[in-house]
Image 1 (cartoon, helix red, strand yellow):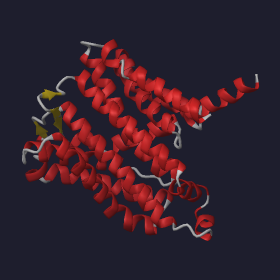
Image 2: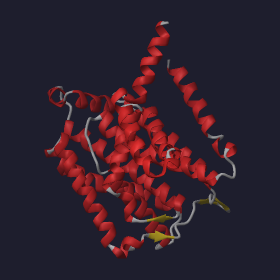
Image 3: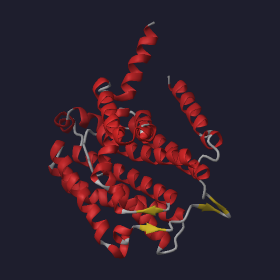
Image 4: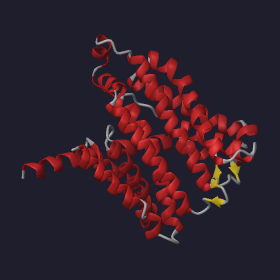
Length: 315
């Protein structure tokens, strides 16, 4: 079973690596694939928190923005390169997640935690709007440089796609390894029954905080990647609405499935563009389509694929 999963993963990576070849010269589509890959990283991080540990956060967009602004600030104001700024952006988002998660997760859970993270997300966006020395306010930061290795600059969407793909594969591998470890099993136990997990000697608070920090770190990584792709960021992109979109992507794909998180991000990145010809009606159709998918596939696309797989196995 493991060998088949490994071969399937290699096949998917190989097919994904052909995207810049198939869509060569079509920057619009290539940019959508880049954005989908970036969102997949954010959603995988949220999957660790919600799918593994059972904790709901609506602050992913805030950590996404912290990573983006940290990387943008360091490369445009301090003259660091992308490879120097990226780990600092991840660390900044993780540290802020620790500062938020440590007091919150010691006292709150369920919808109370969700409300607390909504509040933090709103505060974070207001800070980005008003802290002009750091964020340039509502005008945002422009001129964010593209990554480079030696003399080669990843200044095209086709080239940049491979950087994003590499990080999607890396984060998916880390997430899969985490799921199979003692830490992952402890998070799963907390999700199923926190009281029983505590009775078994699992420090639930510690593992919930760890999941929250990892979710923040993934979002910070994704924020840095997107900032250097679009080369311009503004606080409007990191609102509460964006956190809801990330949550819907995860639920649609399957909250505890790595492949489902990636698939949900890809589908909900492309779906608005597919529906764009409907003009003023597309938001209504988009919302109805998402609601229908969630109602008829409560376990997400990963659950649907699991059901189909079992039916074919019995046939």
